[in-house]
Length: 216
Image 1 (cartoon, rainbow, N blue to C red):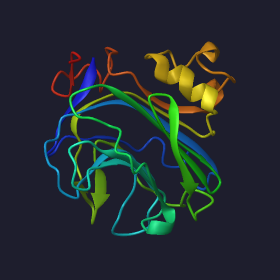
Image 2: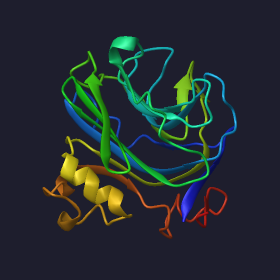
Image 3: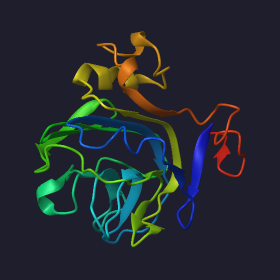
Image 4: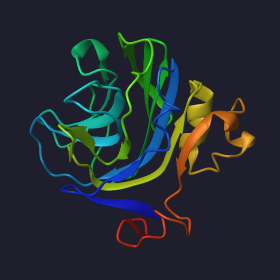
């Protein structure tokens, strides 16, 4: 199962992590995505964000088309070019499952696609911002409203207050795994796991058939 996003108003929100992700130097976010957008303009599609572009920014990962159908994985930790890292090779195709991951270790950012590091760069902000932003899956906030909606499916969202190693990411990207088990990782990260949306459980939000459905 996976969460289905229509690209116009679908979003998942949680405020349970607001304090957990403030002012931390180490962060990782992972997801399986199946984008179905058709636009080729300079467009962003939010995957996972804790962000409000109109006020104090925090962090997020997006797809960025920039004139192509295939998308680049994009990280931003503060709203300016000095906080952004992007895979210029646009490796993420529409209508197929791809695993994406971003890790933050102070100012050092690494982006992974299907378990392989595709780009590293620098975020001028050494920690996440001290901002009470709601974590969103499938959108970002702008002027208090949800925007930049993802179109397609998102599954197995994980957020950690730790920097996953390359070996950790390779294991997680091999197939959907139980993120709460130590054997999933090269190094045990279970105590650092702050969010895991399996998109298959019988509890909300996964049991809501309006937003959860069988995989493609």
